Amino acid sequence: MSDSLERLYLAVQAAQHLDPEVSRTARLLSRGPAKAAKKMAEEAIEVVLDAVGGDAEAVVRESADLLYNLAVLWVAVGVKPQEVWAEMERRETLLGIAEKLPKAATPALRRPLPAEAGRPIVALDSRRRRKHS
Image (cartoon, rainbow, N blue to C red):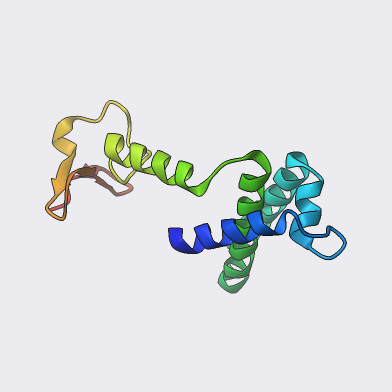
């Protein structure tokens, strides 16, 4: 998935210098980070509303719009996808794949996977914490 987002980011980055009269991306970027952030927020709300309404097909469509607008926002504020991936890696290393694990979790809840030695992983269900075997 990160490859797709990186390609999208590169396409947005390339479009920033196009004519804003012709390119929607160039037009969004020419209006500054605040406009890009507003558009991303609008798409996020649409995803949420469609999810609450149970319309999975609309969630898919709006999620694609959301990811596009996220890439636009990244370009507008100078964030590179690699920086986001590095932060995700940092969090996984610290907390396991379940990023929202309580910070006071004991080391017994974490154990490395054979395929990813050195990377902790924790599975959570809605009732209790448990180790994955």
